[in-house]
Picture 1 (cartoon, rainbow, N blue to C red):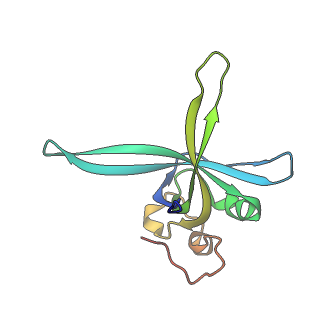
Picture 2: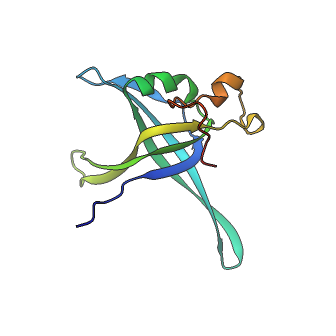
Picture 3: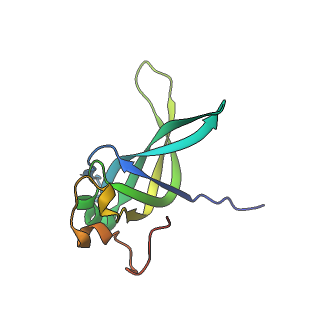
Length: 136
């Protein structure tokens, strides 16, 4: 039997500031939502749709990245897709999906950022090897 591959890479912009919380076991969780656009041709006309995806960073990496995870910030994330069920009283259970982030690549093109965090911050993505570059 073949083992499944669960790796996802998306690029977009944060639609709100990230939120940090700590679990009961003391683990840091940083959550945010990224908007990813898809442009395609339909009936001879270009159209665009936006997909909103929840992302989660964990532990020390979450703490390091929080100052850079602000509304409007362009970034790419690499991680794995996670599925969970939300249950509300009086409603059917709802399947939800999020990305458990392994690595963040911040947009380094200062001209595309509405608010610059400075060159040091814009180039930092929190990885171990600072010579790595974004996959775009």
